Image 1 (tube, rainbow, N blue to C red):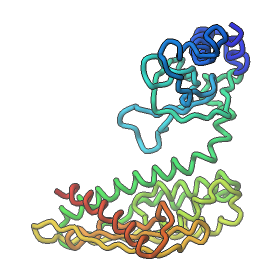
Image 2 (tube, one colour):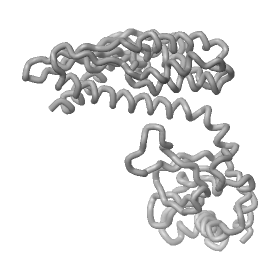
Image 3 (cartoon, rainbow, N blue to C red):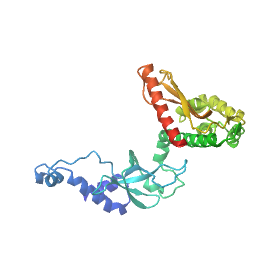
Image 4 (tube, helix red, strand yellow):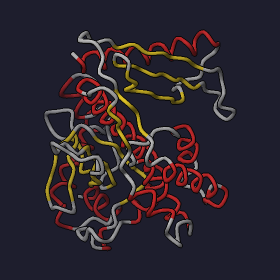
Length: 329
């Protein structure tokens, strides 16, 4: 029971978890060598091989579990913070406890934060109070979450554009009508007071799905989103004025022939990013004679030559072309 007491006291867990602590302590003891078996582990004596310990994590610490709820919205959380309780017997999964709902859960899709301990004494069941570890990790995970939202929004816009291009009548204009976001930012007297206001400006742009003309500029702003925004307020202001000045801009989709034709162009520079030395790929795709999809983004790896950069850009464009063709068929 000494290990059980250590697991509970070391992580400041309530005494009601003594059963889970005993269960995990027995699992650990079976994987530890003992003199009674000649410095072998009970697992090795029973199974004839040494135990695999790479899957072990710190008991009682924070783990983020993938949210498998169907039909999630774009702003819904993709993971939930829970408490790690050990390994599930009989399968390659982890036992976790959700303090907010008081339920046990078994999952394999888990990301661990072994340097973050759950604050049991601060009312973990109260959703209005954010635990301390969430405040620390928010600045390191928000960029990934926002990037995922932008990518999902771009897919939805492309799908809608292809549908409009296929059913449009001659010279039908498609205008941008999202006017609330841009005007509410620029008219606010406290628009640029502190990091929270600055982040709200960039988030509003990221959720303006119809405006994709300044993706590259927005990407540069997002790279420094967790830093003090004093040097980047001018860039955010310029982006907001761009949104406000292009409200009535749009694209005209012309009805084409009966046969569906998808064609596009791709290009790439070489190491234009002076910080990471990564190249930037760009592509545009047409549905018959109507522009339906365009994208410019930094490549994920560093290209060693212009040929390699062009090859990566062409590969990305080919995958996107196949997706558009399947969407149109």
